[in-house]
Amino acid sequence: MGIALAYYLYFTWSDARPALEVILVTCVAFNGLISFVSHVIFHKADASRLGLESTSPGYQFEVGFANLAMGLSALAAILFQWGIPAYIVLVLCYSLYIMQAVVFHFWRFVKRERSDAGYLWGSVIFTAIYVANMLFFVLAAITQERLAPLS
Image 1 (cartoon, rainbow, N blue to C red):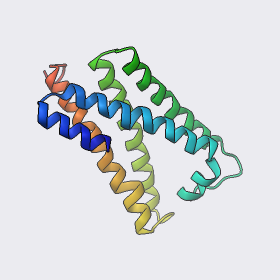
Image 2 (image 1 turned 90 degrees about the horizontal axis):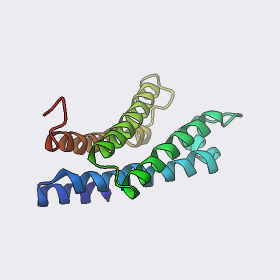
Image 3 (image 1 turned 135 degrees about the vertical axis):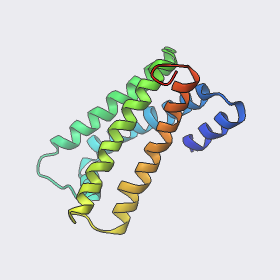
Image 4 (image 1 turned 45 degrees about the horizontal axis):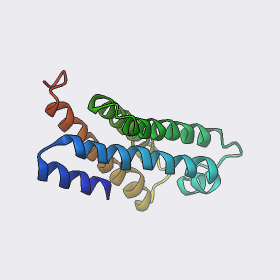
């Protein structure tokens, strides 16, 4: 929903700022906080869904805390109006973080650790499209704000 609203704002107003703010709130802040809950509070179900069951949920907690850090940082950036450069950095950071998960899941698919189509579409393809959409708004904002190196 956030990405659709961001595209609407961007192409209606020809302004990357409000679109990037929507991405920051919905894709980074909201999803970061929800992912924290999923990875930490419901770590057993999350690990089972991904086929990564373990007797020690340490990796789940680390991923959850990373999501929490980015989600809270995004909220702080919006609440304290840190500005477009901060928004760009936060969305870029989260995009790269999620892209690394895409690479990890793709590697698991290639190695046949998880070879079902649902895993490929959900954990790899749709997530890569999600990241590409976030990066579109990062690049649009960098270009619009004439920030190096694309100025």
